[in-house]
Image (cartoon, rainbow, N blue to C red; front, side, top):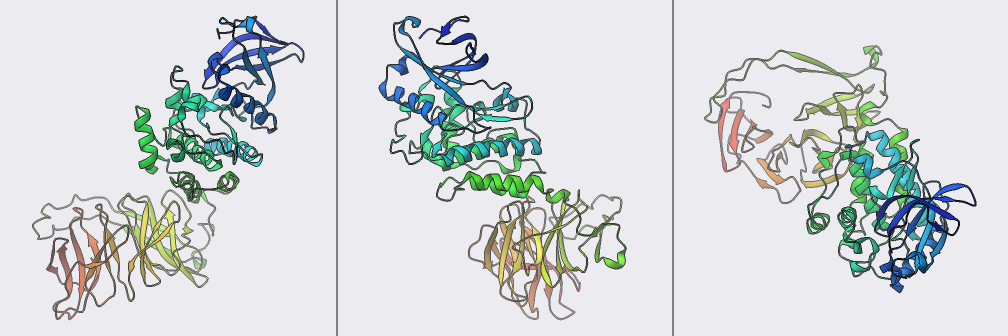
Length: 527
């Protein structure tokens, strides 16, 4: 069908100007002469009108949209038939009369880069409400993407174009992407590529979509708002679909102030196996609301005001002093470090805390420490750009914390196990047995953890993902055990404390490629 001209009329609607084109046809700004309001007219392409299956889908869209009455879903006002006289080829055509939503699309907004965290979460909350309403009526969107989301000038979100919607449980398979109205519109620049980036793995495999497919797309949209780039990208459809099926988003691209609960939400939304994916978008809305109504951990109100008298506080004074020291007399360390000014930092801990072990993150931006509060021992996290610390759930009984090189995880010992916790998501994993009197660990960039399984054994090594622990050193008489490993910057060599008689104990240097160790100096404590 030829493009509609300004001034042409369909029933009681007068065409004013074109608004754009999408996978389900062209859209025009129009005037409803009866109700004296402006509307959007979406015209189905003539070639689709000639296809009974596609025409059935189009009519179904009208029926489905008519059942939705929600402030965050663009409304449908009716369906009209365009007489054949209005067609250049004498074909009948059909159109939907839709609510006209002013403002820019989320795609337009993202063209300027990432959105602030607060704004992203508010937009995501409104999108989740729209999907929740649709899913509650048994409707799946199947084509959720930034181009189908409008933001009005007053910040109100409207989800558009349920043109690929189908009832939940519909036995019409998605097999054969040529039957997808959006993907079939190869002549519309950017339509295929724009849709592919938000397709779930099951849709990429041409399998049936359900509500969890919308949740995947929701996760992609939220990620892009926060990171300023798509979760899965590529120059071609093949590259994009390959990334969706095989790759993980770059979680480090998310801003530092992203609440841990939101990162956890994203990872649950973007599970490739939909059986492991979040099942109900209402849960996503709950998590977002919790994240926005309570201050992020880095800005949370202090458990105790930091200026309260010290008689009521237990505190750590951590002195970060870099002084001129002599270089270690070993072949791989030759130059003396540069003298740096002394710096002092006081960490105020919760009242009554019995503080012991602590560890600074490699980037110097956070401290994790072990504290007992009200008889409960666990690890606490204190970002150094904040005045407060928060407990890390799942670290109860934790001792001897140490950081991963990427600052994302913390290793610790609890319950006879070496464990790790993802600081952002709170996910805890057992890595290896560490049954008795453990004495510290260290983590290198290659993904190897060096740790003490007990105070009377050699050091052991294990992959940071977990697995079988193998000895990394050999305890020989008169030593009684090796403790407190510390990787050197090359990630291959390490220092440790060998416990034993005074004339033999001290700081030793070892290497991952040898069981032998070299005594560096006499000492009574860890390096």
